Length: 327
Image 1 (tube, rainbow, N blue to C red):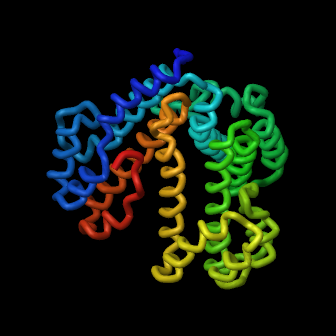
Image 2 (cartoon, helix red, strand yellow):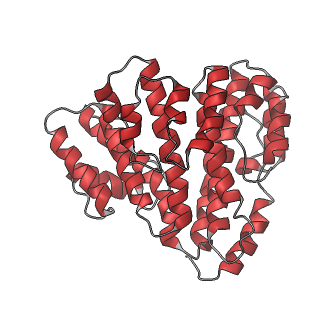
């Protein structure tokens, strides 16, 4: 169970960080064959298995993440704060369960889920349409969804409404680092949404129904400049501290023509925010950083092996890798 010593928690986290793969090993995997990449993964102790088979990848990832969640739960000196980041897993599960219920499909459980709530508890909530145990802003969004579901609702609306409520909850949390993290996430994601919908020729209503809550950039800005070139959307943000942050990502987007470069820049900045606090031994931030590091590592491992399976080369794989907490 959680304990109350920041110094003890951080000391334990320092030791656990030694087991992180790091960018060097991931790059070695990117340059290897699929078989060699899996062997490198197994030799690192990842997934606690001696079988170097890509068919075992998801089991290995689930094992590694499970251990990380156990460690964070045991070590965190501030459960309420770490729960803000774990809650995203509950939001993902709720999206799936509500969509399954809308389709008339069974609400099946999974032992891999690790959030603030047990998966069985989330199933019970969705089956009953009763969400009293959840934070108020998320409960309100779900109650509104229940009313809409009685009529007709698109699956995307379920996702957007829950993502928006989750971000609103996080932005209201009384912690400056959490608020900064989710401001960055919302500003980048709203820009990505704006560009993606514009590229797909969607109308203004589609944008208004797809944006998250505002970070440092008001939603009215994205709506006002919708349809303008990408560079113009960002250059017009003179009022916002996010302008300089986003200009570099836009320059990469203008050069490569891919929204993926903006997504990568977003993920790198979010990771840097926590990695810059890695040595703060009197706070909970190294514990949160370790949690996010393990999740980012899992995404990187899945990316490398998946692209290896489909025949992509080292250069393409390396370009798609995000920054890691420990290089």
